Length: 177
Length: 122
Image 1: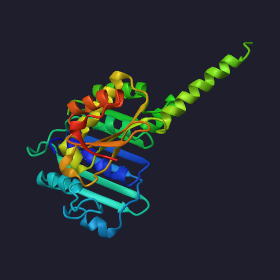
Image 2: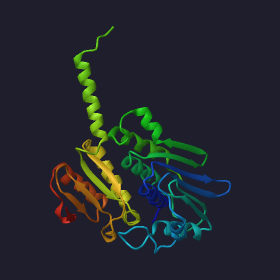
Image 3: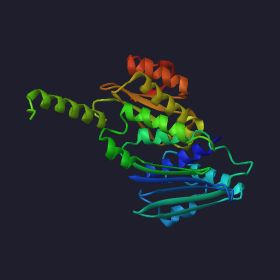
Image 4: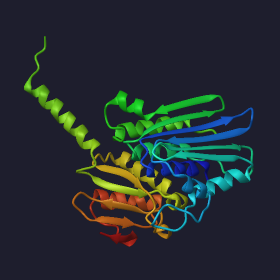
């Protein structure tokens, strides 16, 4: 994958697959320490220890449709090759948390890419999931809570007017990595 | 004081009904974009964004877009399936953003399946 935002999309897909109702996504760029943090927390079905131990193995998957599971292994290798760290905690019935930190000046780290597209696509196609998104970069902090949006607008979040508005808002605020 | 008339009630009913229709995927055309790791690596996000953009541009209110995981046909990704109300579910393969826009125009809007890109129909 050529963009970090594609990896993020892929990781959030795991939460959706795990039937999460609430997904927290934090992307934070610490300029002073030179570290990029990516944190994803969900309240999905979680994983038992046996699966957690195998999660970085590309030839392991819980799926029956195919024999490989590349999402987390690809992300893990990428972060590890840049001298970063990935921690995954999970508890059955409670949810999963992925915590990654990586020096963002690493030459092998792909660019962030179209993060607004990633977030827009997730919100637009999953109207029943509450996303809590926190982005901190270059002195800016952007917080998006789809639960708050839903409560204040009272029309479906995937209706065309809301989708258009969100697209503009995200495009304006999520560039400049 | 202004009196509530039957007309007002009708308006409220219509509005609420329209909202309910919007909320439920029943009674709508469905587009599913497959977004497993394989799909994303093959460009499914760009396909999804093109679909959402086309729906926005055309103001299509009767279409609901959702996503699904990998179905084991990774070599045909990006895959999307389109099901018109009361029609068959059509699975399209190698759907680039350009093809997605064509599928919206030809299949979703005009009801003509884009046969050259079909992988299977059920």
